[in-house]
Length: 233
Image 1 (cartoon, rainbow, N blue to C red):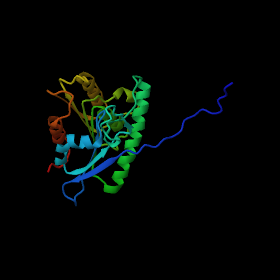
Image 2 (cartoon, rainbow, N blue to C red):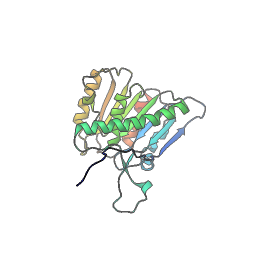
Image 3 (cartoon, rainbow, N blue to C red):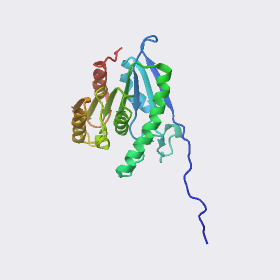
């Protein structure tokens, strides 16, 4: 005979690293740029990938995703493992739920840094999996985010359909590769058209590139941010 006396869920805390870097003059007020890495990446790897972004004067905040991905080769230490931002099994309800949890986590880190440095503006740059999260974060936490850069991903506007949209002060740059085999550009372009209807200042740009994040994507991001007052060193 078996009796279930209690059935529930318990909380488990996972420590995730972050890094805040300052570039440019130490005295002037600057913008904050938050970086959300791709699937199976970490902040150390992503910092190297986006190094050209340090040409922008400001505070650069790197946050590592909360779900570590086990290294089956056993060649990496735990702190070197790649990570995932959300848990996705193909079901949209689970996807949105996990995006919300990750956004709550990132929001806390952004708020903590904002209290320390009082930035003039806040931008979020997300790539691939981090791009999906960046899009959700930008729309769900508006107006905490002023400027949003999404590379190789899709902003899931359908999640916010039927809800009050008031994004007139949100600037969005969506960068996509015409040869991207991981994420097609058509759905992202459609999402950008929807954002424009909601009043967002949105720019969709397709480059002759693949999914891999390279300097051309970053050059486009820097130029676009500069047009909104981000100073280039």
